[in-house]
Length: 508
Image (cartoon, rainbow, N blue to C red; front, side, top):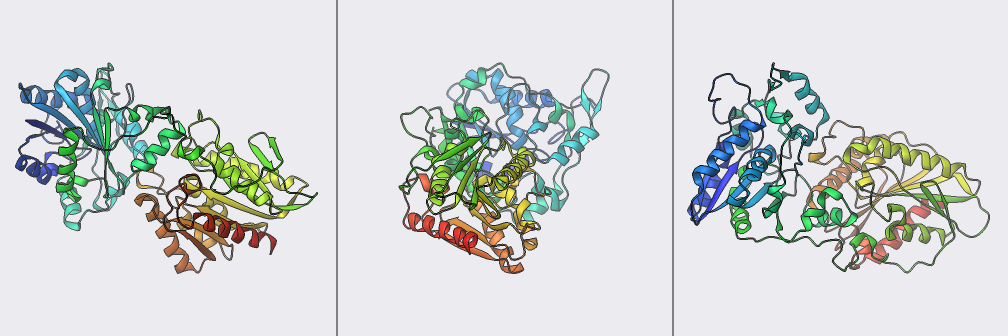
């Protein structure tokens, strides 16, 4: 018999699992929902401070009570719940058949749960509320979110009004010691098979995760292990409330080892982002200075220029660096062949917290390009890709006269729910109304991931509302990064149209 032990996330308790647990039980599984101290039940010794070790002990007690010959224990941790799950599994590794990461992060040894909270303001609030006792145990509580604040902790996509009401009414304060005490692991838990259940309205799906593994994100390399599988749910951060039966089905399949496998980087294949550009573009002279490459057209100039801005986050260790990726070099050679300087650069978007310095890197590169005597400083376009999209907000807000066009391919055009950047200035949807008549060319992938497509739809709606000068080029069968994938129908034509649209703004 499969034994599921379900551990809820911050502010919540066993009640959130009601419908999912009922479905699993109906399918013949044994189900235990863990009441974490301070969330589902009061502390055993009155007013003692509650920390992560307290919650690890809560999970251990359920494991020990449920363990019996022939039973396969599947530990499921949602959100914060993955921290006590891993702490307990590390001490009972031989008793656990599988760990399920339900829309959670990848906690590491020595790192507290608070580090995984994306919203900086929430992290600061938690730190300010914490109090230390004489023995160093952190006390205090973080109040649960107000009804309209749950989105700061994850996407509420798929939740009914009644579900949000219930989530709010039954929420409990989170003991701060559970967020501030570092997780301690011996490494034993690394031998336990694992499954990630990805809620695609709140974070990346399998395809995007594969891209991140391919790029070389060190923390994700282990996800391509044959013992690690994945499922996608097209919903927000609380699938046990938005689609409990679908979640139960995924957990049942996970328990039997089902799910999607990622492909290791060294599996004898070329990662998608390093495959050849879909157009056969002749080589062009290239000059490299610092973090910037110039692909030069024929003639002395001055020529218009297009600066191509890569996406991310891209780990600092990635090789080759983005300015040498075939998509960027392909576009740069393409425009150089048509009389325009193509510019590629490396910027320091290594994490979603790096947009400030990445934007500064782009601005510095643009200044250097405009100062080059071979460049017409009054005719420059900026072309952004993927995770570089939020940087467009810097240029949509009061654009300079020399900026003739902004283009974006399969971009992220608003901070994603899990990023904690909702209030930041890197929000192109909010900036668009200040763009005036600046031409914007949007290359939209028809098979985009749900989380990114939602930001594009929001951007297009805002363009219609404020009368922005937006041209949309659709690649209906195109996926994220379509230029180096198997060419989709119409992809080559779309690239030609996009290049033509941008160059028309520069040369017109």
